[in-house]
Image (cartoon, rainbow, N blue to C red; front, side, top):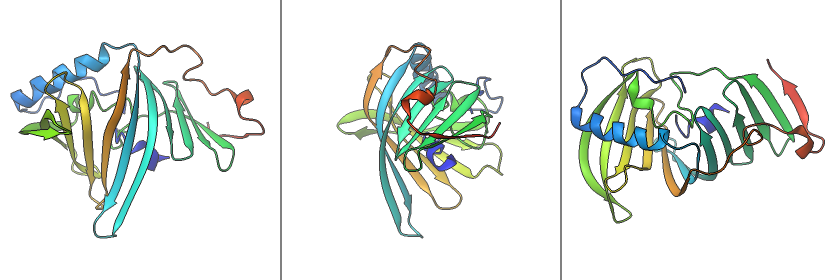
Length: 214
């Protein structure tokens, strides 16, 4: 499950501004980006994630989509569906027709889908790298580094659109040599959500085996 969650490669409780000295130019861009997403009631994104490890000669591509509302999310990717209602996590594995239920516990050394837009606010130093083009669009590149040296992540590189402050892609670099790249293919703001969006309905998964780990 953590391999899946590593994509967004991003604990949802990070809302306090970091006290360490930060790059003000990068901070302004990140604040504008964060405000954009937090102003939305909900959004949906389709994405492509690439896992690379040069030493192990690994390169894997996976596609998925995610719906996010505040701290809640519903993620579909690689035969799995992960639903987080803010308190409980449901991980459904299609091949096994099995769902694991656990209490959701945020982990500052992992990156959850709802965290990418507030990641920089606590526990990370950030700096402006440069302006570049991605798919013909001007972006600002910003790098974040965890203050905790025991963190398995040593760097996160984000590309933020200069046009509308949206996140176009990001990379997460881990000490074990794994490099995750997430590219947003389609983004839909303010999608309608209700109580069922972030709930696991057993009736919709005929014969599902339920494993309650709480």
